[in-house]
Length: 302
Image (cartoon, rainbow, N blue to C red; front, side):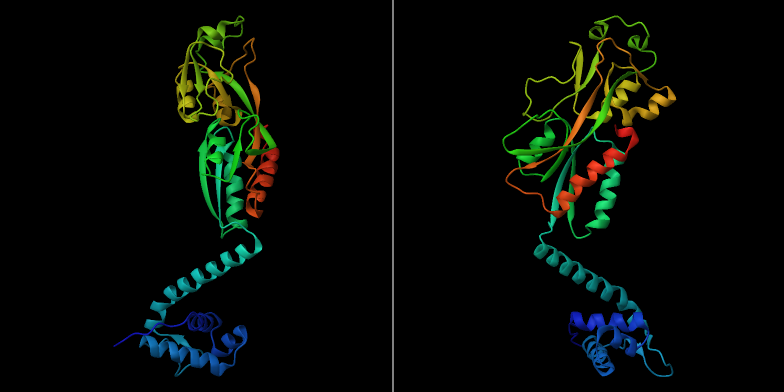
């Protein structure tokens, strides 16, 4: 037996009858005569060679075993068609089909998660490609065209190809394990230079030769903020960390905030960055605004 291919319209009729519970209800929902609904079901049954609804002995059409088995597939096809149409309408409305986003590792994870959760609800048809980078690597992703939007720090003060809009800040605090020599209350000026400092290194070439809050000639350069955090908790060196990332450790005593004469802590300004030759679309603009609002409302982010 040769099985035919039902049309999308026939699949929608099939779903409407099942969801409304009657041919009449499906007709009212789709603006069709009952005879047109009945004809669509009959045509689909003929193409597939199966009976979809039992029509005898009941005032309501009841799915057959074959109908129940085909229902999830019909719904999946209709859902994919709806998604295709929604994305096509988005193209006509100027909405991006996808957004590449790179987020600085200094951005509090809670803030990023909150924004991305809302993004999926607001823009279900926009594919989001996410990366996490540190320091100049955020700008490097934009300049290479890998991403369209960056949420990054102040290490790239200006670049002729990038636009910048300050949207918030995160506090950096010097920390160490409680038994570290610098955890004392009477640290003398310059003593921090005598101890190993853990420093987040820039994996891009944009800031070659530049140093960021490096006080000690004894330093380990790490490309991963999580590794730096782990080493600090093990008592290996001291270093600056975003306060939100170490708040629980400070509260539990696993780490202590250092009171150093040099006051190496600072506010790390966060900016939205994008290429000047690529104007942000609706979804990208929404991300910029929502990151700003979220960073402002996150009490531990300032």
